Image 1 (spheres, rainbow, N blue to C red):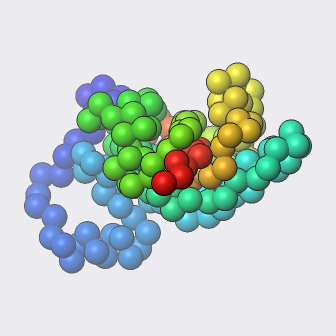
Image 2 (cartoon, helix red, strand yellow):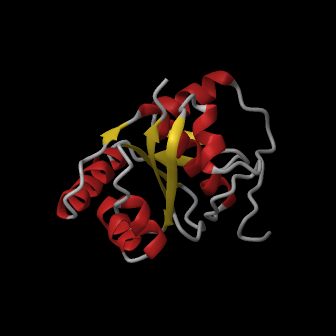
Length: 172
């Protein structure tokens, strides 16, 4: 099996089992892999992002639930594939994923990371990359959403999958 494939479960999953997984903080990501969401990651990432933006004399961003949902969708997809890619398994880009969540935008961007310790480590890594840095200090960005999915399989090559989605909404 290649590192981007996952095995599907060999038994049907009942709704009560799925509900118990969700209440325990676990999720079955597409492809049947087990993963857990890090509920504190978004708050920590927005704090790190806003600290960086203040250092660059830029206005801070606000958390946006639709961007957060799009980030979580893609983090789950990356965990299921055991790889990070800006294209989803369905061929979607970040613009497609935020539109599915009802976010109408003028600007949208996405940063991905895998295998890092925490939100501060992800922010530091992104600041070391010209394209990711440009996304984080884009003066047009006013909102953000972030998610981390942690693979529960010890054989997963990364164990953590981080997604930051930044945007500026279109005004109707």
